[in-house]
Amino acid sequence: MDIDLILRVYPFFLEAAWVTIQLSVLTALLGLTCGTLGAAARLSRFAVLRFTGAAYVSLFRGTPALIQLFILYFGGPQIGIQLDAFEAGVIGLGINAGAYMTETIRGAIISIDKGQREAARTLGLSQWEATYKVVLPQAARLMVRPFGVNLNMLIKATALVAAISVVELTYTAQRYIGSTYKPFEMFLLAGILYMIIIYVTGRAVAWLDRKVQIT
Image 1 (cartoon, rainbow, N blue to C red):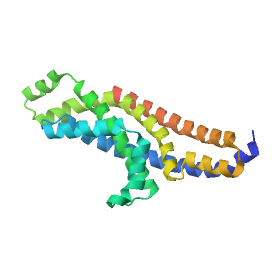
Image 2: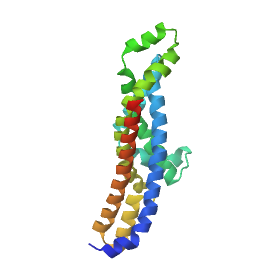
Image 3: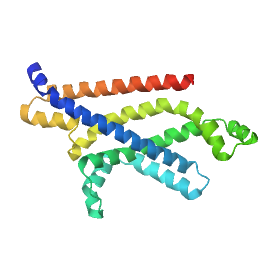
Image 4: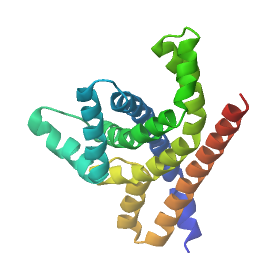
């Protein structure tokens, strides 16, 4: 193993790791937004919204995320969508992650006993107040761990954006392999940084899970 090479290139990998972190945070926020809207649609009283939510989940869970990125980045200009690689990566992965988060949020909400909503309505709360004050706080406790799993998968999925030339960890490793011919060292360094990001994220999710279980 070429330790000297690793020491020379690791500052560039740290810069790439920061791009990966930014990509992960923005994608997670977009995914959570899409997931919330998707779950609301799937639980709506209106058939057209339920159908739209189900179609969204089926489409984006049923096709590879890499193909979705290619369609958005390479095919987008044909229909007037001009995005740089980073923007396409965030939007593509975010919408894909939202399809999984839709089912996470929906599953947590429907797992709450319907009797609690009915009891809240009996006490004079409106449908919205019963959902907001009674159902969602309990559902939130059930969402944290699955959200952590989704976030873990999302961080690893950011490696896909290397295919559209976003300079994150995987792309940086591939670029340095081309000039150093040292794939073991380059991918090992990238893998270690991925592990650190995922470990820190996992600890943060575990802390949040303990907090919401206490409150």
